[in-house]
Image 1: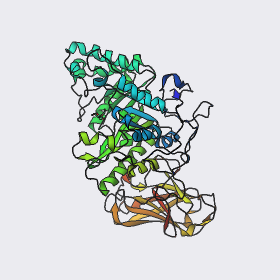
Image 2: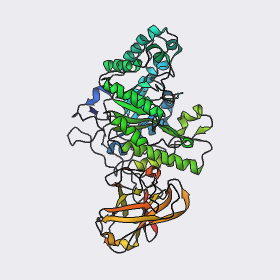
Image 3: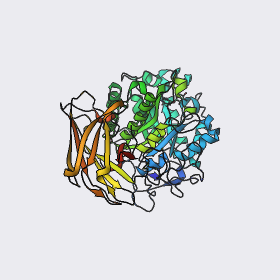
Image 4: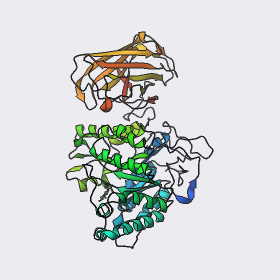
Amino acid sequence: MTWIRRIGPSRPEVEPAGRPQARGRALKGVLPAVVAVALGALTVGLAPTAGAAPVATGSATARTAVSAAEASTLDDLAQAKGRYFGSATDNPELSDAAYTSILGSEFGQITPGNSMKWDTIEPSQGQFNYTKGDAVVSFAKEHGQAVRGHNLVWHNQLPSWVSSLPSSQVQAAMENHITNEATHYKGQVFAWDVVNEPFNDDGTYRTDAFYNAMGKDYIADAFRTAHAADPDAKLYINDYNIEGQGSKADAMYALVSELVADGVPIDGVGFQGHLAVQYGFPYNMQANMQRFADLGLDVSITELDVRMQLPADATKVASQNSYYKQAVDACLGISRCVGITIWDYTDKYSWVPGTFNGEGSACPWDENLQTKEAYDTLYTELGGTTDPGDPGDPGDPGSGALKVQYKNADSAVDDSAIRPTLQLVNTGSSTVDLTDVTVRYWFTADSAAGSFGAWCDYAAVGCASVKPSVQTMAGAVLGADHYLEVSFSSGSLAPGSSTGDIQLRVSKGDWSSFDESDDYSHGSNTTYQDAPEIGTYIGGAVVYGTEP
Ligand code: XIL
């Protein structure tokens, strides 16, 4: 893999409209790299990695590592975790200055929503028009962003001349289209969605012009043709409703396994991620994406949005937050997940209202370009923390100067135990009396259980002083109807010091299984991360974290 150094103007001196102020320091002079080759001549060749998501190597030419604490944008946070965070965009909105101010500063990657599709690029046979696609590429160059090319072969937004061709001419037309477009954008896009949406929802192949002419072999042919035109681009197959396990994902897995086995030049699988709160979160998304990564491929979430039936209400918004959180967790839990792209960042330009009758509010920014709770969720989940004394922000450490860090010691999300490992860190300047401290880890019991057991399995401070118990919440909320509460019978924590590991375990009296994947405090990280979804209290007052 080759990396680029992102170039372009440094970040704006003034926070763009619509973004919360005082959220970390501006990153002056720090130019985080994005995942791959873009921007042609500006490519900086670095040591190839084994194809995994990039990690700063310490080489003089590697990007400056960005710590979450310094970061101020979603992309900065993602970069600190070796990923990009991007948005779709489209030509009409590029003249909206308030919109482009955020588009150009918050995201490290953009995808043209329409302007590289077949009907725009080659509306009649042999007539290629790159004006609109080029405008998106120029915007990206000006703002040091990488571009995902979207897309080369798709049944939709396909001009009628293609579907009207005699079968015998479709292959040549497809190859010509791919060669022309991929050559035009060679060095300008780091990745291509070569084939988009090849499957019906039941996992059968879509019988579009390409399939009708060539059978499923059109897919391998499209990848080989794209590779010949732009050997450095990462070549993806991309689809929706393959995020969770199911027959469509299985069909995609069978196809991709075959392409890999046949030596077809495919580099990645794109999971679009057009989610809707009324349909539930995709089943086992992380495990499902992981099996594709295990084929030796990159994976990414390419078109994330979470729509709902309007009007929005608190329950739908809570689900939306939870879906955004779980999608980020799924990507961060997979080393080969290279990045996340939202399908435009604002409800002002979302495709949802125009496509799904009565639905909307799918994006993390509202129609007035103000951030919504979904933005805060993304920010927190990507590891963002806020400046002390900035009340109301997620994970606000408040005045208590104590925080909790969490790692998951239990890789099974569906067994009879929940096993969080926690440590408390005194980030302030005075000693904290642990007997005043309580910690809450929120979860759902998933089925009626008469009783619970809660144990300290190990604590660096000694389990003798650690008192875990399970409490029932007065009212269930999304992601929580119980919490594990930890208190201490002795001990104190000096400034700058940590309790070290506190390994905890919860089970139900009937030993039935939990489904932890939707638990508010659950995370998939196996090394410590700040955990604002676990509450920390001193004298009963919250000092760190956000209650569900
Ligand atoms: C959508 C665009 O956002 C709309 O503006 C357009 O009218 C239709 O297509 N899956 C894809 C995207 O791969 O190309 C689609 O984009 C959304 C669904």
